[in-house]
Image (cartoon, rainbow, N blue to C red; front, top):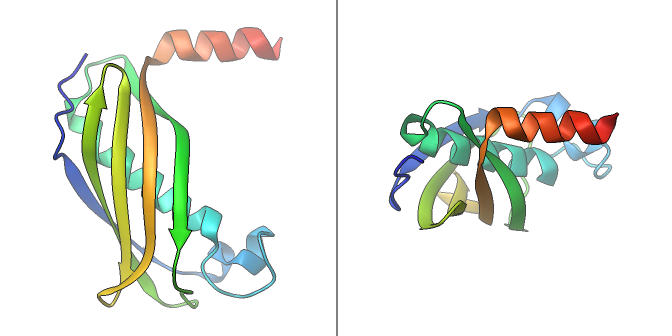
Length: 130
């Protein structure tokens, strides 16, 4: 397995479009950044933070998240997600993600991912789908 040492980090930005609102994806009926979209942004940042440290054939899958969505972001607003790997325990990776807009907190997210062998994981998924 790769090192994935705590401290790995990345930053990912998103300009909110109409297709990313609660209204558009069905998680609410207001035209602001949807919480599920926010979580997806955080997960992408976590994946990118460790991407260069994973050996060939390895990937990570999300297994748990806790999100505190603090502030609404309108269409046209840009949010910035800062993901940091804070712990590596065997195959389990623990992340903290802070999301901001113009220096103001939008969300705080704790996220857990597990390292897996990509081919074995997909074989199991295919077997259970049959």
